[in-house]
Image (cartoon, rainbow, N blue to C red; front, side, top):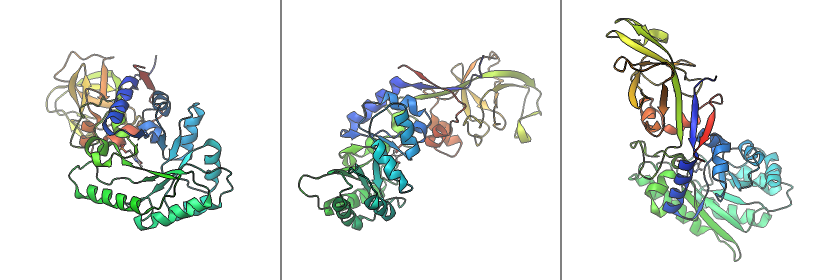
Length: 364
Ligand SMILES: *Cc1c(COP(=O)(O)O)cnc(C)c1O
């Protein structure tokens, strides 16, 4: 008794992808677990990767969620604090902060905290979203040092705009700006500045980006960060998003299926209804002919995705029965491929899985 919609989370695959990332780029590893572990469930991911050097999250709420699981791995707030009161919370829980703008820097210098914090300094090398201008980094570092709010070891960090296009000239330009900014910082004796710039795409394709810290995200979940690839050798998809056939009907040629009648049968057809929809995170934009797997074979979407159901043309596979399992994406149907049908990327599809879908850890 249960709606058959679920996401199996392959913990063995996750650990194998993590080992692959470590082996590839070396250094210390900060798995990105923001957005509920890219939709896989914060608990599943953080328990499995408890020996990581640190986790990266988007907000203090996500960081507190990890601590409430009893996990004491260091956690970096990748956007720093959104308001000054969060600095006191960060001190209490020992969170690490990215400092990336002057407002955050001033808040920290004024904050009534007793211990210095682990800080990452964000430098904007070309994404133009977060970070200090490269020319400001040395003075920001000096201000934070003299404030005594920064531990002796800090990290200079930046983020690529186009690492998923390995031949893009912008990548080398960003690396050069990053090196220049690093060279300008005067680090006193007994202090250290480490560096971090590599995301998944850089870990897989850009050895010059391998510095003291790597920050893999999407690749840990087993998918290729390169949109032109479905899978990447050495990585195993972690999520198997599935449901089951719950109803089957025959329709005549000329009859249509689903809201707004966007699919019309060109022959006598058999339609299977599957219990998954955009209320679960299956993309409403998925067009007619987006594939699913039933019994290991591809069948195709017919009609618009609704909130709780989709409809599949199974005319050529009349043996399919109510109760048969259906794969929406997973090891045998890459999420990148479904994303291409929907004009988006797999990151959006994975992180869009909604809370009503049970995440079930397997291969622990
Ligand atoms: C999300 C994120 C990453 C990971 O990116 P992937 O492409 O998923 O590897 C790395 N660094 C920062 C700052 C991020 O926000």
